[in-house]
Length: 225
Image (cartoon, rainbow, N blue to C red):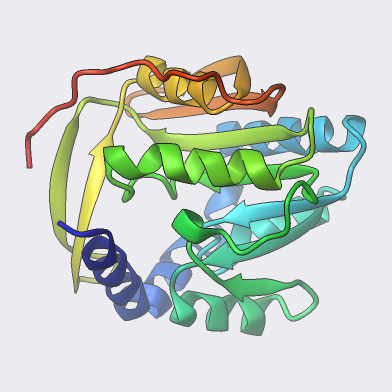
């Protein structure tokens, strides 16, 4: 699949389910103490690291952007789906939201004091992840924290329906934490903590600490679709 193809399918899918997605997840953090704890730790790392604007990349309807704001973080959101951004702007008019893609992240170099990618890398193909992490490295201030949340496993499947039963066409990629950590290391990040939320979620805390090394590790990748 071409880059334009998977991006177009992902954008169309989330435009289609945007209203149902927002309704289903609105208030979900109230019943998610581990997620709240992870986000609170991230917000603390941002504040103790010097603060500054924090990018919520793949923000959807803005629920976590708003939560970070409530934790005292100057958060703004970016999402591929214009329909999601419309809902985010409607529900959180005091915050900033932009339409954009993480594969061509249109932010200036090194202005960001923290970056959150909360289950938003799950639709990015393996061969595009280094490009995405390169953009994350570029826009983050030196020493600033990065938090990645993703599904654990080593398989890929095509999701054709979801969030209210609406049609979708997106691949969902599950990855071992050690693979994601190796990608982060290759992109110039230092992983500081790994938290597993059983059975299928992981959270990696990292910092932008150096320029990427000249070579990247090679991983065997599942071809299951």
